[in-house]
Image (cartoon, rainbow, N blue to C red; front, side, top):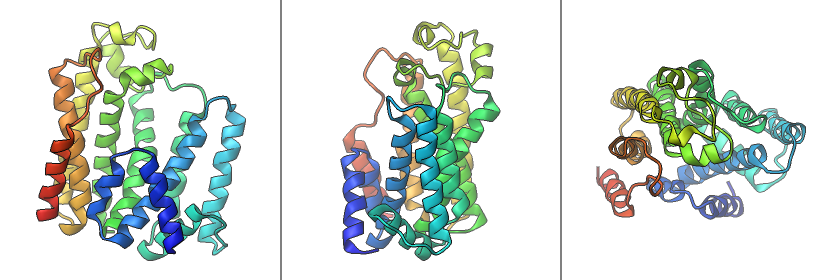
Length: 280
């Protein structure tokens, strides 16, 4: 990866304002740049799927263009701009798999059409696999472990992280006319799948707790798989788990009442987590 392309993807990640930018600083520079390249790819395809004012056909066309770019990279074709050039280097250096990039695009396409409202558990699992676990499968290879156990980490941790995101973002999603909480849990808690009434529903806490239980189970699975992986390679994965899992406890204490400020870990706590992993 050229210094210019590394600087481009780094600037894109930094400008996004995500904690991912600082979290990946625990990686050596070459691996960190590869992770920034993967994040930049995820960012641009997500922006296509979420862009206001574009119809589904236009979004599909934009996502299909990225499928062609990924296909060209694996066919040995040239990379024409900084993100694809950075991805080409990451693919070569860490043996990243084409199907994982395509799965991410497929996941973004699920978000590009009509608003998602109360998917089935099976549909939600497929969505989590595409938008989160597929990114995890790319990431663990860059972290330094391509073993089956590392893929198990990606499978479980990706789901745990995405379900936590869903629980944290319930009000923002509802405002956009979306509900990612599964239909089965909403029905069990007698919550109507209506974004306009979701936040005031008495059963929301019950549905949220059920989904938090599922996320916790995935975090437990991820930790068990991490114990069978190369320890150094799992430091970024452990940082992500340690940064997200406490959000579930905060949501439980609030009884999934979203009237207050958005759930987040204090910056000092994130710093302590990163320091511990660097020292470990």
